[in-house]
Amino acid sequence: MKTTLDCLPCFLKQTLNTARLSTSSAQIQKKIMSEALSLIKTFEQHLSPPENATRLYRLIAELSGCEDPFSRKKHESNQFALDLQSSIKEKINTATDPLFAALRFSIAGNIIDYGSPHDFDIKKTIYNALNQPLVINDYAALQTDLNEAQTILYLGDNSGEIVFDGIVIEHLDGDVIFAVKEKAILNDALRQDANQCGLDRLCRVITNGTGCPGTPLQSCSQEFQKIFHAADCIISKGQGNFETLSEVDAPIYFLLTVKCPVVKDHVTEMSGRKVACGDMILMRQPPMPTEKRIMKPNTLCPCQSGKTFSSCCQPLLTNAENARSAESLMRSRYTAYVIKNTDYLLATWHSSSRPKSINRATIPDWQSLEIVQSSQGRRNDNTGIVEFKASALMEGRLVTLHEESHFIKENNKWFYLDGTIQNSPSPLKKAGRNAPCPCGSGKKFKKCCGP
Image (cartoon, rainbow, N blue to C red; front, side, top):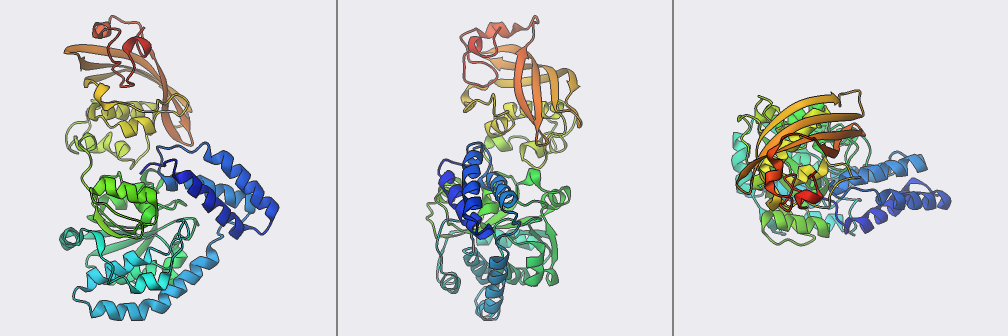
C-alpha cells in the first residue's frame, strides 16, 4: 500500500501525540513538530505509510531522548488483555468452532492501536467479537491451508492483542513461529511483551529485525526473510503488517480491524468488496495482477542472466531483497519492464529524476538484454554505470536501445538515476522520432531517449 496525501495529517497527529508522551517540555515538543513538518515533505509516496512513519518516530526519539514512549501503555495493555484471558477462553471453548471464535477475538483485539487516529472502547469491542460479522471472511480457505501447512508464520502486531493471538496459536497444529518487532515503535509488541503474555511458552518467538510498525520485507533481517519465504501459511495481524505486505505475493491471510480510511479504500480495491472503518476482516491475499505474476519461479529470468527467475530478479521484484549491485538493479528493472511492473520501476528510480508515473500501455514488448560492461556499482561503491543493449518490438519493428545507465546508492539501496544514449548503428531511429519512447516514460522518443 502506498502513502497518500490523506496520510499526511495522520502523520502530524501521531507526531504530536507521541511528542507529548515522550517529553513534558513544550520547547522540545515544538521543535519536534517543526522538524517533523520538514521531514514529512521528503516522504516518498511509493513507500508504505509504516516505512515513512519509521523515520518520523526515529526523529522523535532522537529529539526527545525517549526511545520507548509507549512502554507504560504497552505494559498496561498486556495486563488488561491477560485479565480478560480466562473469560475469553471460556467463550471460545464453548463455541461451535473454537478456532474461528479465537480468530474473531484476535481480530477484535486489533482495536488496541495507538498509531491509528480513532477512539475506542476496548472491552466493549472485544466482548462483542462473536456478534460482529466479518465483512470479508476467507476462513474456509484459511482452514484448508492450515490443514496442509507444516510451518505457520504468525506476524504479531500490538501489545495486549498478542494475548488473543496466543489463544489462536493454542488451536493451531504444525510448527508455529510468532514474529514481533526488534526495536520499540508505537505500541507494537517486542520480545519482552511476547514473554510477558506467555507466547514464548506456546511457540518459537522471533523478531523481524526492524523498528517499523509493519513488515517491510526488504528491510527485515535475513533470518526473518528466510522464514517468511519458507512458511506454508502466514497469518498477518493488524493494519501496519497489511500496509507493508499488501503487494507481496505470498500465502498471507490478513486479520485486522479497519481503522483508517486509506486502509479501507485499499482493502476495497484489493478485494472488490466494500468495507468501512470499524469492520473486521479475515482476508486471503488476492492473486497478484498479471503484470506482477507473469513469470513462473523456475523459468529462466528475462534479464538473460542464465539463472531461474526465483533465484535472480524475483526476490527484488517482490521486495524480499535489495539489489546488491548496480548491475543487479539494472537487470531487475529490465525484467520489470518485460512484465510491466511499473510500481517497481518507480520505487527504484531516484527521486531526483523519477517521473510522476509510467504508462504501461506505452511500454513495448522487450525481447532481449545484453550487458556490454559495468563499472563500479559494487558493495563498497556509491555510484555505478551499466552499459547495455536492449531490443524491443515497437510498432511492428525490432528496435534496440543502447544506453549507459547511471546508478546511485542511498541508505544502502541502489537507485536508477538517469541514462545516456550511446552513439551506435542501432536501428532505434526506425521507431520514428514522434513514436513513444521505449523506456515507457510516455514521452515522444525525440523528447526522451532520442539523440
